[in-house]
Image 1 (cartoon, rainbow, N blue to C red):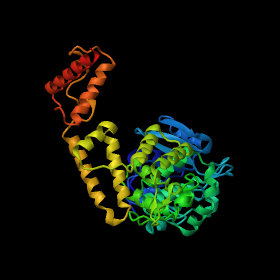
Image 2 (image 1 turned 180 degrees about the vertical axis):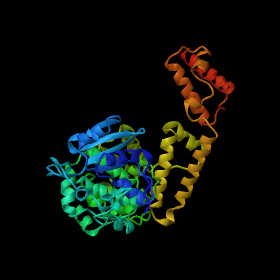
Image 3 (image 1 turned 180 degrees about the horizontal axis):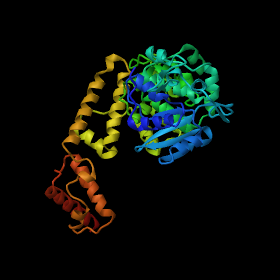
Image 4 (image 1 turned 90 degrees about the vertical axis):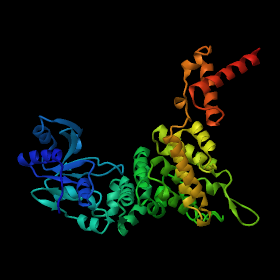
Length: 450
């Protein structure tokens, strides 16, 4: 099997070996290489102690990222290579990090502490692939399996539960039965993990091609930090628009959405408020009046538990708020939406509504065709550089001031009024027509004041 290692990583590997130390490329970069994918980063495990690594690379930039745990980062040709001494871990007192590490003498001991067999494979040009725990076979058979006892691995570091889900979602691998059973068994340990780390893993899960199956199979684990998921599972909608229960509809919507993080997060949370809003009419038809507002409130609570950047949080909440807003392939309506919300948001909203529709009953899929038309119209408006924002307006503040308006708030008000007139197609977006319209606004105000 041909494992290609880039020159910057080979430089570090060869220097360690030339200094007399066992050294191997290890972990995810080997896994991805076996899968024919391009690794994002490269890790090396070595028999050299941390202080020895620092000495070997004294002419390099060395960042002592985790010296007490045996890890340093060597900058090689401008790229980081993480170098870690063979080690075994002490007791895990917080279900996340070992209280201590012990540097050990063998590669096998080092690999035995790792999370999954697909990540416990080592390689060097001299030795080839070293696979003590069946990682190559599991990669070939598309299986995520814990190294050794799964429960022990998850009790050591409960974030591994979500990592298994992320790998399965991203790679399309099934999770080994015993590993899966112990993930469910140990799920409460996730309460010891920071919200930031959980959000990062959740994001990776949602962006994978296998997100639908992971959501459905491990909704009890997701309920540990999104409690509403326990209510959504099996909750029948009893509505002709829907063929799935709330959780399955959600999982399908995530799957059918383009892999944009904000859109997939919104798809995950857009209906979390439905169980709390369920109403059944006299004919036994289910309705969910006000569920968008309820879902917004639940989403805010989720983001309090799982902090992320403000842009992502506010974008997702806004998408949930408007996910049921009617959108038609009407030129003026699309431009009004662009004026109010901006290009990126409107594009994300159309994508969310399309995914939502694709997760409903097939006989109502004509909505999808309309949404596709909306998307095409949006792209056409943007590509033709039509005006829907102040920066696209053919005149600016100086032009308005030249008409005798003092600089200040009133200038902005006039420009905003002109932009609205352009969007409504009451005036052309040309300098002459806009100046003419501006003069009309100024004169109308003067007459009103007079």
